Length: 457
Image (cartoon, rainbow, N blue to C red; front, side, top):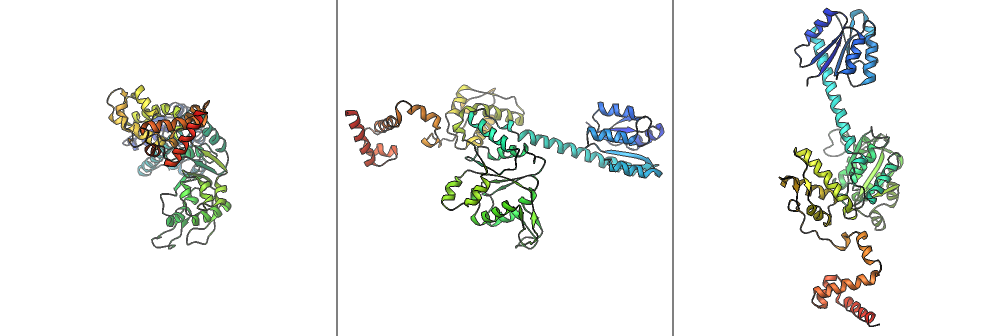
């Protein structure tokens, strides 16, 4: 639909001239001869640009300008004034008018002003729409799941989002650490500021310092111009450090100093720069283990670990798989322009029995493939192509599944069942059974003898 213009001029002849001069542009013109009628049109139509005379009966052009800016500050207003009243036009500019033209005016300046104002109106609308999309996407409501573990994560993130405290998000790859960090930023007082990201694992250590702090022209070979760093660009907002466990020790030391002072110098520069930045870091590594191994600075660990949040792997919250699956199916249906298919019971069972070492990212990929393959109204187990090399191992089984097995009988009974199973699979061959269990032959013989003594007593 072409943009709609509200033209307000009390002189019929002048209003007709203005309309004629812009009539060949692709737009719809609404005309009003006084301020009251103009406000009625503005309040009941989708207006993209207002052209108004300042001197009007009943309601003045200045009052119309104020009404438009109160309702929607992004709508540009062009004011018309007599040649000897430019002072009033300047006042209008100070109150938010986009431009002014004087009577009598030439055709070309008016047309250029209208075209530029419409371009600004369109860009403002696009920015507003994109921002709304981002805000809708990166909210806590968009983090799907109602399991107790993910509810605890959301509660923690919601609590810390209203502060400036540093946050450390831990969890395996694909669990949604960046999504949670963006949601924390979008729900914080810094939401209107930038959200800048640095992947410490993707950038060579020799370049990470320049990426974080920026550099001056000539600081090193290839530095042909001044470049701001991510820390500086994130001022007033949030800096997200993904995979911070991969940051080299020398860069850790420099980063720690900057975190404590919020001041730094660009590479090759001497000017001290101050930046107001909130830090959210993420890692899939055990940072405390790295601290003990002297590969991660202990003082930096405590500086970023003010408020820790751990996102559990998908295999530990399998009750969320159905909801996540429906969410991704609906998402891909919109993208592919097709009706969302149902997920069959056998298909869901197949998803629930899979270990999901790639977590939510892997689930999303599997369902995207399924949506491409599915040509009916139901996704079956045949559409769900899983990694055949992934198997449920002890470390991938949730403790919530293991503990009930041990309740009543205890660990000794579980050990007895494992050894009995291995011996049956190995046809009583102790060496083979030991390999199945991942223990030495001597250890298995000791445990077998212990089992015999217990059963005899």
